[in-house]
Length: 88
Image 1 (tube, rainbow, N blue to C red):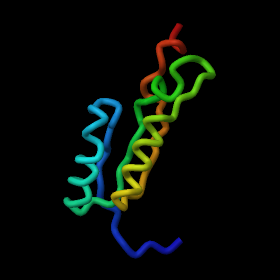
Image 2 (image 1 turned 45 degrees about the vertical axis):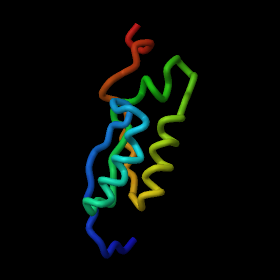
Image 3 (image 1 turned 120 degrees about the vertical axis):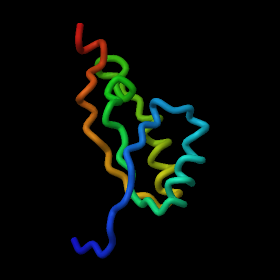
C-alpha cells in the first residue's frame, strides 16, 4: 500500500474524558493538523464489563467522531489494564 503523506497525531483516551468534550477535542486535533489518533489501549473493562458481555458504545462514538474529522484511527489492544472480573 503506497502512502504519500505523513501520519501525525496523538493518543486520545476518551474513557477518561467527559463525553461532551469529544467533538471539541476532535476539532482541535484537526485544526492542529493531526490526521491520526490512537485509542482504546486501556479499555478492556469498558468493552467487556462482565465476562462475555461486550459494549462497544464508546468505541463507536470515537470512530464516528474521528471519521467526521478526517482522522485515521489506530485501535490499541486493551491488555495493559485487565478488568476486575478477570483478576478474581
